[in-house]
Image 1 (cartoon, rainbow, N blue to C red):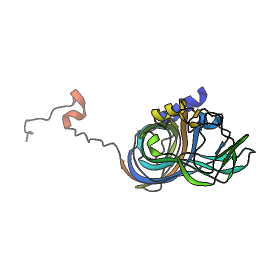
Image 2: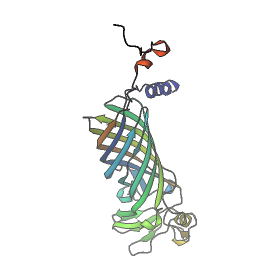
Image 3: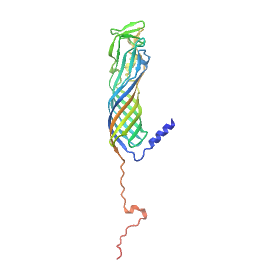
Image 4: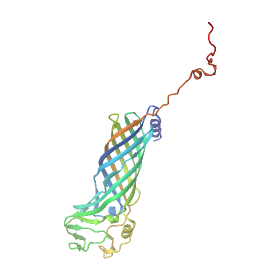
Length: 297
């Protein structure tokens, strides 16, 4: 590990004096692989995490690169949140729980160049993402079946839910809103690490690739909703005690972003001042002074 660290430092230090400062403006789009780590859902026998892909429909970038390092601002509209399969009491798949969060995201990133070629820059990236929630909800869709509700989770009192000795018969529902947007925090913070590359295809245009893993710093849900899960006081559960909408547990959202973009670049080389010299300054103090006398005839 130390060897790798030393190699990275050597690459960073290897930028030559001929390298340029590069300022770029552009746009990008891509997709995300979200993972919702929820301790409560992991303890619930009804739910099983599913591989999920979400979109980053549009984003804009502004970057400044200097020798060895740079800064990158990439505001975007992005979608995260994992889908969970719903299984019945005998393990059959009967539906889906869909966690959806749409953000206006403003990542502020520091780039450390792994190489500093004039036409290609590969950088390690560390970022802080300030994400403003645009919309969020959790929906449930499932067919008619018998489901095992864990103790502590309220059984809905709507028509079609029938308690049996070994489970609960549930009706068919389609995208039923289970958790509304007002249960989520409006402002969320993520920390991101990854790689970013800039490939200059001409003097003014660059193709960009950016891949990052982003980690949620706090629970995405509001504290009063978490208190409601922690201290059940709603409709009764399977053993006739007050229940909550879900089992209590901390939640962290993680998402891998993969983005592709195109940027317009402005390169500015260091400017050198031309130093003017006089006859007296060329040879130092020993330079003979010009004669004032007229030559003899």
